[in-house]
Length: 178
Image 1 (cartoon, rainbow, N blue to C red):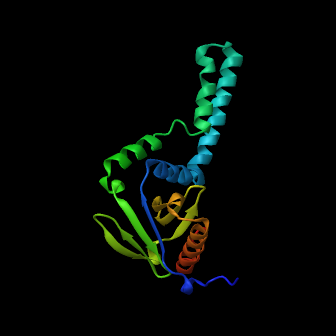
Image 2: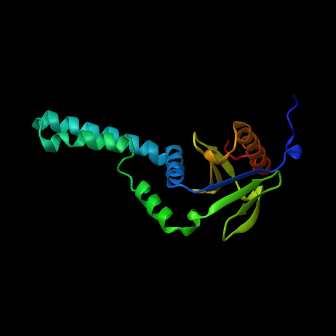
Image 3: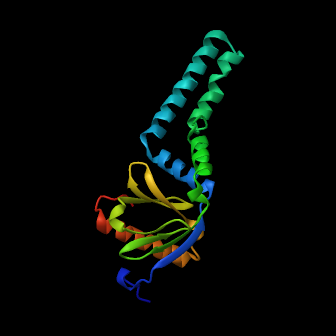
């Protein structure tokens, strides 16, 4: 069968209530793509090296072995306060308790909640990042709209959205990240 062009697509509509796990995943995705993730790996290796040095110099003691679990925690980003901060911000923001209704068309995105009824042009967004569980529509450094994949009714709707969002954002910004 012939694929429909973007002009033939009916708006893609989804509804969802924000969940904390989506926002924590968004922060994890952004962290993993940034420089800080690489710096944290170097710091973890250095912490491990400090542990090796202390064990070699002073023997195995609690204060010499302490560096190894610290290195592992740093490697896996377990020392970050981002998860805690994201959780607090999510719980404090009453907007996240509203049900979101979104309609994506070739021209724009329509947002509707109990307190919001707004239409944004695709030019608002600079890029899109896709993870296993969500899409991040980027509109600035660290600023994004979360679209959880769980809100799509079918794999076909998800695929249609993926095509639409990539074409719409790429059409607006040739340097947008796929």
